[in-house]
Amino acid sequence: MQISSIYDSNPERWKARIAGLLDFLREYGDQRITLRGFRLLARLTPEQLAAPGVSLLVATVRGQNGRQLAGVSFVSGYGKEACLIAVHPLYRGRHTGTALLSAQLQRLGRLECQVACDNPASLKMCFNSGLAAVDLISGPTGKSTLLLRSQPDRSAAILPQEGELLCQNPS
Image (cartoon, rainbow, N blue to C red; front, side, top):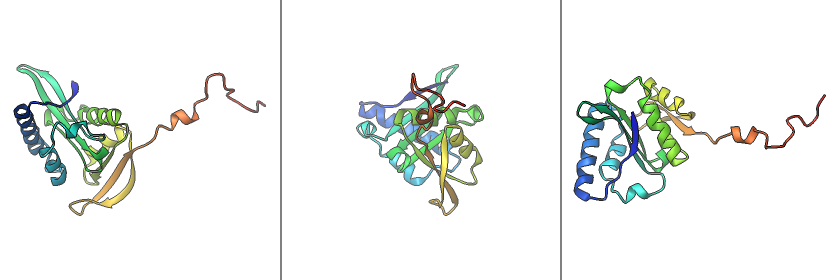
């Protein structure tokens, strides 16, 4: 599986590419993609992709007819405006969504998502990517929804520096 960023300065190719990704989301998003996020992606321009906190990634696999789309991930506003992920059913359960979300987090540095509590597969994907639940809110459809955020890297704060004594008061 290969994860890559999508961008194209040619307006016709861009429109065709976005249309294909929207079709993919419509077909494989299992009716869990928010209308707001879908509309943001539909109106996305190559210039907006250069803005901080905006990223469009795809996961592809090698097939008989070349590379085939396995998953799509779109983030806007570091996830506050939109955080969409859809994976083709053939590639679910293979950590494709986790790989996409982890790549988004690595690319953007921070991320937040809202996931309905009745969506255990997406919750597992978020937890596996290192996101943590920080709040329980009412989602856009009124469902109980977890607000998940990336956590600052705390491990760096507790690691000793080179040459530092591991124990200040040896017994």
